[in-house]
Amino acid sequence: MKVTSVFARISNWLASPEVFGRITKKIPGEWVLYEYYFDEKEKLIHQTEDELKMNGESLQIQFHVEESFRTTSKLALPVFDHLKEGNWSVRRNYITLVDPTDFRNNLEFQFAFEKENLKLLKKNKMGKIEFFGFFKSTGLKK
Image 1 (cartoon, rainbow, N blue to C red):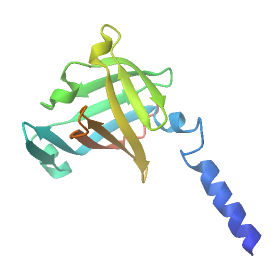
Image 2: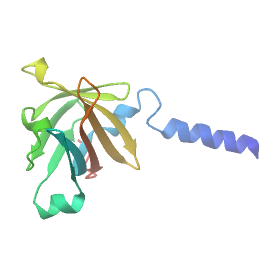
Image 3: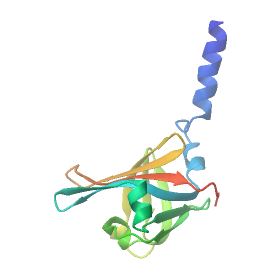
Image 4: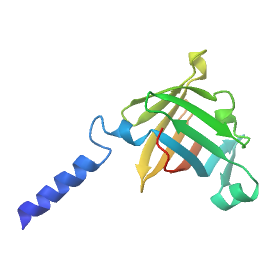
C-alpha cells in the first residue's frame, strides 16, 4: 500500500510544472486576464472579472511555441502599454517579455500556475507590487 502512495506522488510530481523543462510546455497558448491588482500612484486598484466584463475591458496574451508573444488590449494598463509583441523566455519561475527593439522595455514577471490558471506578478526594484494578474487559458494552443 505504501509503495503505491510513493509512486502516486512521484507520478504527480512528474506531471507537475515543477519538473525542469516542463514548465515552458504549459505557457504556449492564449491567456485572457480575468482579474488583476495594479498599483497606481500609491493606490491599489483591484478589478474583478465582472468589472472587466461590465467595462468592456480585456487583455489577451498569446504565447507561441517558438517563444514569441503578442498582446491584445482593450484596457488602460500602463504595464503593457509599450510592449505589444516580441519574444519571451523563462528562467526558473520568471518569464521575461523581451522587446526586440529596446531591452530597457523588457518586462519581467514572476509566474505560477494554479488550477490551470496563469498568475503573473511584477514588482519594482524596491520589491513593491506593481501588477498582479490572473489569466485563464482560452484553450487555444499556439
